[in-house]
Amino acid sequence: MFSSKTEMWATPQDFFDNLDKQYNFSLDVCAIQDNAKCANFFTPETDGLKQEWKGTCWMNPPYGKEIGKWVAKAYKEAVEKKNCIVVALLPARTDTRWFHDYIYMMHGVKVDFIKGRLKFGNGKNSAPFPSMVVVFKPYR
Image 1 (cartoon, rainbow, N blue to C red):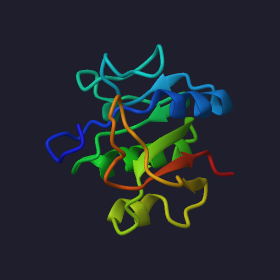
Image 2 (image 1 turned 45 degrees about the horizontal axis):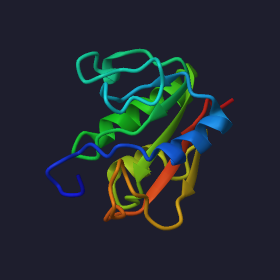
Image 3 (image 1 turned 180 degrees about the horizontal axis):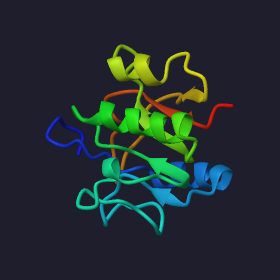
Image 4 (image 1 turned 90 degrees about the horizontal axis):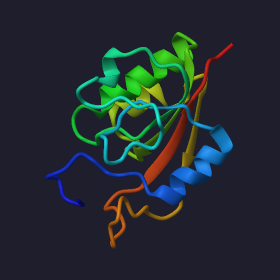
């Protein structure tokens, strides 16, 4: 689970539960049946990138080359279209284009860097990268 062979990093349940208490999520926009965090969720087959997002959304996208598309979608749905709030668990990759285009110093976006490293899924070891929680909200 902790190699470049996978892009899927299952959200630690206790970490999600603490955020869910604060945000009360209604939709997991990027899940598979085995790791969905909400009763309502989009799978690779339903393709959350092609769906309209509503309510308070949880997003832990695949961390590979497609991650920029997910971050762009979150920004557009929440900040531009004002359809929803999106709370995203992302790798803290501050050198990427997607970070600078859709997160860094953007209106309607809040970033919380996570101290230490998360243990994803049922992993015994911490992730080989730092993480951040990014909140995308409608900007008035």
